[in-house]
Structure formats: structure tokens, C-alpha cells
Length: 361
Ligand code: NAD
Ligand code: GLY
Image 1 (tube, rainbow, N blue to C red):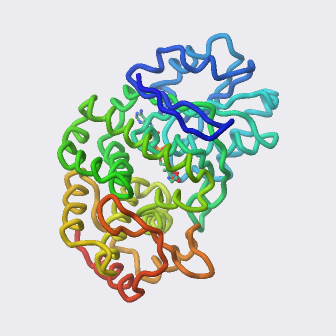
Image 2 (image 1 turned 180 degrees about the vertical axis):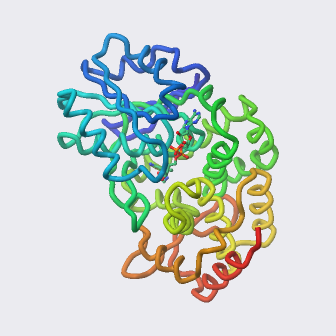
């Protein structure tokens, strides 16, 4: 097992990464009181709920099982968590345990941030995407029909327990979606990691356990460093949104759940790279490397055909980074060097949208 630390003063916490962690006694020392509510969904419960309940033997634990899917990441489903907390008479000492992917983690985290003005929670991420990204850093929330992750709070967990064995039951498409966020770390600030991915991407798609463990650890290390430097995203943390302004537009336009978050981010990163190239920031050689790695990771490379330029612009203007009606984007100067900018060529943005929307996949 590897243990990393997110260094946030009195809100610091460990990230445990390893095989078979659900069979180990890691969680107990982090829970200071008796009451626990496990939040999971109907797909994950048959796979990992018993193990999680066994880890919590001795606590007064209850479970709420939510419907599965990004389309349920909303206020209505969130209310089911509050219903369970109140029905079971859970007080301010309760600890919520998020057992699942990013959807469960974001919702359980937001419920913890707001129940009785804030209670503790623990992340047990079970998808690659949640192990490398969403379980770390304390962003929690739900979607609104008009915009992705628009309602939420920063609320850090007490610890993150990433059992890499849970990835064995993940569908290939979900694994690839997680790899998109792994590639993101290489692109935004870790060129040696990008180069490692160029040499090892097939090991990841083929689920080589050591390669996956390395990629998870390296991604969490990169993210923990950025979060420690800028917890509430007043600067550097925005770089973690590489590809997300385009990607969130794709997810919102298609109807939540149609495109996986990681798939939309993969296309978004290509669009951001293309705009960086057209704006004279990124070299053609780097662009080719990014396209090649994305294809090898079995990720999509173009947005849905039905989308229009106007729809992209409208949705991108609602992005959380947009300021005073100007779309701010994370762009690439080279592989491993990202910037946040509103200083890109507007004609180039239109050309990027035009060219990606005319691709026939
Ligand atoms: P997800 O939570 O929808 O999980 C993907 C699918 O895999 C679901 O059907 C789920 O039930 C299933 N699943 C989960 N674990 C499984 C397992 N071990 N075996 C079999 N099936 C399993 O999607 P995700 O990709 O994990 O997360 C995407 C969400 O995370 C998005 O809502 C995105 O906005 C959010 N996100 C948040 C942050 C953050 O910082 N908070 C960062 C990135 C993404
Ligand atoms: N996934 C973006 C962030 O955590 O800031």
C-alpha cells in the first residue's frame, strides 16, 4: 500500500492506494463517533457493499442506495441522502462514506458539506476516474439542467481509500474515461508522466495492475500538490480543468449520462490543444503526440455531430471560469505546460469548433 498526503493544515488527510484495501482495517481510526451512513448505488452495492459493511463492524451503520448514473447527480437524488440521514436520526457526529465513482463521491460529499451545516465524510472511490481525480481535493456538488457541477461546495474528506482491485469489475469504456484524466496530469504539468504514458498506455488499457497502481499514485501526487497550493481554485487549481470547458459543454448538451465525463474531457483536451496550436502556443509535433495518445487510450476524438458552434459558445459562457462574459480557457504552451487564458484568438476558437464539428467519426 502507498500512502500519500494532501497537505491542508488541520484539514490534511491521507490517500491510501493499494490492492485489497477493502479487506484491511484502515477506515476505523478515521471515524470518531458511532454513526455512519454509507452512500452507494445500485450497481456498486452488490459488488462492494458487504465488504464495506464488514469494515464498519461495530459502528451504527446504515446504507442509502441511489439510482446509478450521471443523470441522477442532481438535487432530487441528493435529497434521498438527506431523507436517509433524517429517517435514521443521524446527528452532527455522523460520518458519510461514499462508496462508488465520481457521481457518488460528489453527491455524498455535498450532502456531508450541507447536512446540519457540515459533517465528516470518507471517500472510497471505485472507478479509475474517481481514484485519480474526483475523490481527492474536496470538490463536491451536483449538476443543474443548465450546467454541469453548478451547485456545490468545497468539503475535504477525512481520508481516501482507493482499492485498486475494485477496478477489475469496471467496464473498458469506464476505464478509458479514467485514463483521460490521467493523461490530463501529464499534459497540464508533468511532461515526464506524459512520456511514461506514451510508453505504457497499452499496459493501462490492458489493466496491468502495476501500471495502474503507478498511474493512480502519480496522478494523486500531482493533484495533491496542486490542491495543497490552491485549495479553493483562486489560481493554479484551475489548470485541473484542462479540457473541461469544452467537455462540460458536451456533457450538458448531450444530456447527462450520454457521454461519460472522461470521454467528454478527452475530446475537450484535444479541442483545447487545437486552439492552443491555432493561437501559436503549441507546436504541431506536440499536438500530434496528444492525438496519438488519445487514440491509443481508446478515447473519442470528436464531439457529438448534433452539436453546433452556437451551442458550444452558449454553454462555455456558463462555465465557472467565465468572467464578465468572457470564456477563460486552460490552454497548452507545450506538453507539461498549461496556462489559463482569455488571450486566445477568437477567430481561432471558431475555427477549432468548426473543424471538430465537421469530423466524421
Ligand atoms: P460514475 O460515478 O458514474 O461511475 C461510472 C460507472 O461505473 C457507474 O455506472 C458506476 O455505477 C459504475 N461503477 C463504479 N465503480 C464500479 C466498479 N468498481 N465496478 C463496476 N462498475 C462500477 O462516473 P466516474 O467516471 O467515476 O465519475 C464521473 C463524475 O465525477 C462526474 O460527475 C464528474 O463531474 C465528477 N468529477 C468530479 C471531480 C471532483 O473533483 N469532484 C473530478 C472529476 C470528475
Ligand atoms: N477536477 C478538477 C479539480 O478537482 O479541481
